Each structure stands twice: as C-alpha cells, then as structure tokens.
Length: 347
Image (cartoon, rainbow, N blue to C red; front, top):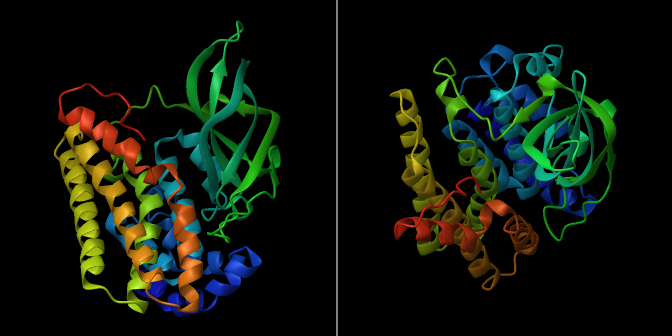
C-alpha cells in the first residue's frame, strides 16, 4: 500500500498548485487512494479494512501532505473518520459500509446540534462548519446535545446522518488548505435511529475489540491535525535544507511513533493508557505541530521558491485547528505535572 501511495506522489505534487488555485482536490485522486487501499488502513477488517498498524497510516499521510498539504489533510481526516466509526453500533456500520465499503464520512465535533428524543430515536437539527471533505463523503458524523423536555442538556452525543438527510453549503475560503472543502453542513429536523446516536459520556471498550479500535480517541484524531504539518515541513526542508529543523521533525516522528506503540502495547497487555501516557502523547503531538510551523517559517524567510508561499499559507491555516493549540495543551500538562487534577484530557 505504501509503495502504491508513493507511486501517486509525483502526480499529486504536480497538481498542488492547481488544487490551491481552483480550491478542490480532484475526485479522481480520492478514487485512486481508494484503489490502493489508503482509506481501508484504519477501517474495521469486517468491512474491508486492512488491519494495519497506525504507523502505516501516519507514514502514508505524512508523505501525501509532503506532496500537497491540502491532499494530505483531506485524505488524513477522511481516513481517521473511518477509524472513529469502529466503536459504533454494528447496525450503523452495516448501513454505511455493507453495500459500499468505500463510503466516506465527513465530521465535526463542535456540539452544534440539538437532539430531542422521540420513539425509536431522536430528531436532529443543527449546523456545523468546517466539515473537511463534505463533498467527497456520503455520511456525516457530528456532535449534538440531547435536550430534555425541560430544555436542559442531558448528554453529549455523536450522531451519524446519511447524505440524504443533510445539505452542504459551500463556505470554505481559507487562506491556505484551499482544497480541503471544509464546507458547512446543515441538518433540519432529521430522524436519527437510536443505533446511530453514540454517547461520548458512556464510551466503553470490550476486550474482544482489536487494540487499534481501543486506542484513546484523542490519539489519532489529534495526530490527523499534526501529521500534515510535519509533511509540509518535510517538503519545505527538501527545498531549503536545514539540519537543525530536519532533526526537529525526525525527533517529532520518533516521539509520536513511540507514544502510539506504547499505548498499543499497554492495551494489548490488558491495560489502558493512564493520564500520564495520554498527556505525554498529546504534549509531544502538539509540540510536533509547533516544530513543523517553525521549520516552515524559517524556510520562508530564507527562500523564494514559488511553492514556499503556498505551503506557508497551508501551515498558517492548519495550525489554527484545535489539535495544534500549544498553550491550551501545555497548560493542562503543566497542571498535571504539579499535581493538580485535570479532567480535560480529550482536547
């Protein structure tokens, strides 16, 4: 699979300027990534998944982003959404992948939806912005708050909605990442069966689930926001070599790989990553984003290659994602380090 992805990189790199100009990644590129198995990397094996190790996903995504940051970001998020589905109800997975294992999801986990309980499920309404890949997806995964008869919030849910129940409004006009199509998605009073609504507050795992599916949800979701930055930095360092910044990027990847492998080993031995492990993983991930931004910034100030301006805009846009909020993460890590209890381990 990695060899096949690498075979696509020259074509993807050659199209990067056009992706930036026209504001979209060609659907044929997404089709080719399907063909080589990229989107199956993190998909459950029962639905066509390759049962791959996370490092394969991280490596492939980094190399895609080094060819075109928009393509790497778009593909990385569509692929990680497949992994996020693995803890959902089997009936929902059958609905999504039973007839078409190549179905993709876009997502937004800002709790902008309102769920009201009705017989057999819920009624959902809401509007979510910046849903990466909305026009390449046939399903939507979004966050919503369950509201009781008294109007009080009762639960924080993740909800699955087919394309027939939502509309996409073109809204993405970012400074960079021009091709990711992070458009707005609107749902108006759609019925959601019980099995398509999933409580984050009641998340639980069973020993029968593969270790990959039991990884803490923040681990891969936040890495999906950092790996494209590292890919962009790698591309810039190929254009404007810097041994110190290259060492920073290599260090970041070593730390990321170590942390993911240690979490998997813990799970496979019958345990679950503790707060120390999760916070170190998040700290190293967010610092990787910071190092990547600094590497690109240094190159932009020292060169005039045409690609540098585009990549710099991509990086400035990507760093705004919650996954790369350095101050927020280090504040939580700092409180934990001095013995203050923290309960915001997710983001």
